[in-house]
Length: 188
Image (cartoon, rainbow, N blue to C red; front, side, top):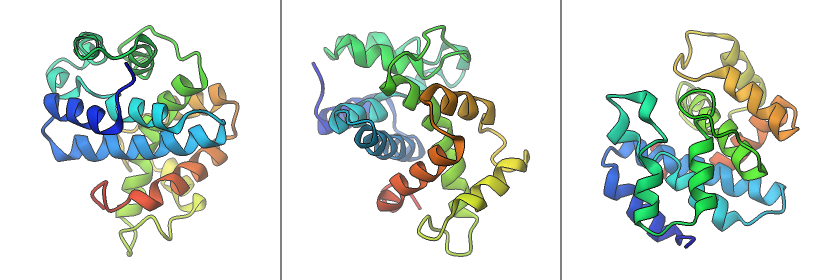
């Protein structure tokens, strides 16, 4: 089964209660839907994957190496299709799983999961506290500051852009564009 957006949100909320995690899922959903359009893929499917990608996050916070390992059982119990489960697992490639991203959907999720956090943080430190006036050059400046959003793994984003066959600047810019319309729903 490919869950509807509402079913995916209900399933995510079944296992996650922190609003920051819900906001992150909504940010990743928006970026995934945007990139699906660029790749001429199904935005509903890509959005659902964005919502569900961290379904096991709160259950694995004490043991981060287990992230992406509980998700398959949670998703199978709900009857979710195997390609979605594989995509969820692949976003942890090289960190907590050995499921290598091999499709446009998986490569995009792998890349933008980290990138959304950097962009949102860059927007929050602007005087406007908004993405509306955030530009690529501002994100690139923050990118170079290793103390800024230090939890964001920039190497994964770079590797992901290469896997997507897109210049890093284009991936960053498209993600900014994708997040602007949803900034209120992602806690900005």
